[in-house]
Structures are given as structure tokens and as C-alpha cells.
Length: 353
Image (cartoon, rainbow, N blue to C red):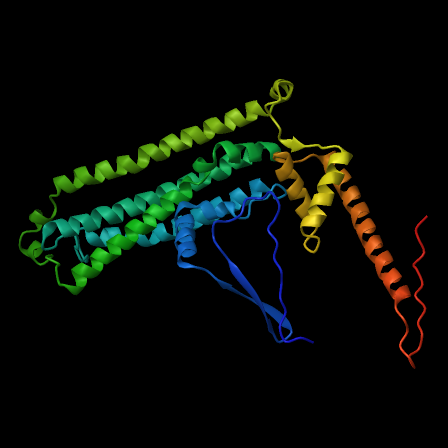
């Protein structure tokens, strides 16, 4: 057995490639195979931006996947994380204001530093609350889609609206990190000025400009989120009207709608030849269906077309393997036997009737 093994990776046909450049090396480790991936710095920054913007949630999208289940699962996870983090931020907020058994970190020297700390914490908590509520709205809207085509159409026309919980969570997380940095500065540089509240507690309860700042920040976060919520619900009604029976008839007559791919057998067979020539080693029924949907520029594959693809794919595999078998048997027949070795007659397998 050779000490090293090389795997040749071919690009997938007519499918969008990731901007992250990857170098993959397969290294044998005992009986298993481990994969070592080297990622350049440019790809790391791109991956970080995709995490903060939520674009990485589109990485696993496939025309064969259950897009509705994927989006509901993503909204559930984001909403759960936002709710858990909100339970941490709220107690910290109560500790910032002046009161009995609180640290009153809003009182600092200089005074503006503590007020900025309070505003950042409050904005982070409000963004987490909005993220949680919007996640629930996304789940409710997706549950109102009946057919797979409705969920796919909604995902295409309201993609950014469905990612609003991710945007709010990323914003809240960045605000919280900034607030924690200010907390470290206040604590480590002894900038707290809460002791002056012991002599004149009334001076520690009057922050009109902080109140105005908080109201402005809350409105900046609330109104765009409310606007996205209204548009998402409107997109749901548009989706239901677009995919109704009457809309299907008018759109198909104009040729402006192609949600399902339904190519004839001749076209599928031509695609099979191209697919197997490209990368026969990685050929699979699901992989060919994704390839076919991408070539037809459709949303998914029709039921009848899916059954036809399965039949033609199996027929293509039989012909390819039969051709390989015939060529190998012909090669064995032409080889001369080794002297002193037992002769093994090569017999063709019986052909199916």
C-alpha cells in the first residue's frame, strides 16, 4: 500500500463556487481519513463577514433540500440564542442605575462614559428582544406556507427580511462587546464615581439627555424592524397570490414563471452525458438533479421529471459500467498468461434479457 494518496477534486458544473479559496489535503490517520484545510486570511475575513451578515446560512441551500425546514431551524436557533443572551443583559442593566445594592456604574468620571455604557447595554438588550420577537414572526410566517414552491418563492423574494433576526443579533452582540470594553475601562482605571451618590442621592437620578438618547436609539432600532415585519407579512400574501391556480395559468401563458423543471428524456440524457464526462467519480442521483435544476434555471424538479431522472440515471450507470466491463474483459483476453501460473478463464457475465 502506498504511503500517500492523492484525491483529485473537480469543480461542480454550472454551480456557483464559493469565494473562499480552499486547499484540501487528505492525510491517512490510522484506519480513518482526516482532512486538513488551509484557509488564507482573505477567506477568513470573508467568512467572518458572512457570519455577521448571515450569508453563511445560504451555504447549504440546495434545490433538493427542504428550504422551509432549514429556515425555521435557523430562526429557532437565532431566537433561542437571543433570548438566552437577553437574560444576561437585563440584570446588568438594573445594576448600572443607582439603587439599593447596585454598583451605579452610570456615575463615572467623566460622567459621559457611564451614560454611554448604559445606552449601549440598553440598545443591546432591545436589539436582542427584537431579534427574539422577529424570529417568532419568521417561524409563524413560514408555517403559513403550504407547498414547497411557496416556501421557495418566499425565500427568494424576502431573503433579507428572513435574515433580520440574524442582523439584530449580530448588532446586539457587537454593542454588548463594546459595553463590556467600557466596563473594563471603568473597573480597571477606577473611574466609578458612585460614592458621591451617598451624600446627595437626588443628583444620581436626573439624566434627561440620557433619556433623550435612549429614546432616539430605541426608535432607530424599532421602526426599521417594524417595517421589515410588515413587508415580510406582505410578501407572504404576495406569495400566496402569486402561486395560486389562476396566477399559475397567467404566468405560464406569458412564460414568466418556471418554478419546476420538466425537461424531456432526450434533454435529460444529454445532460447525463455532460455530467458523467465532468466527474464520474462523484456522480450521484441527487447531484445530477441539482445539476439539472441549475442548468434549467428552475426552482425544483417536478415529480414526473424526478421519476424519469431516476430511471435514466440507472440506465446510464448500467451502460457505463457495462462498457468498462467489456473493455476490461477484452484486455484480459489479449494478455498472455504467466509461465507456471494457473490459467484462469475470463468468462463474460450473462447479459440481461
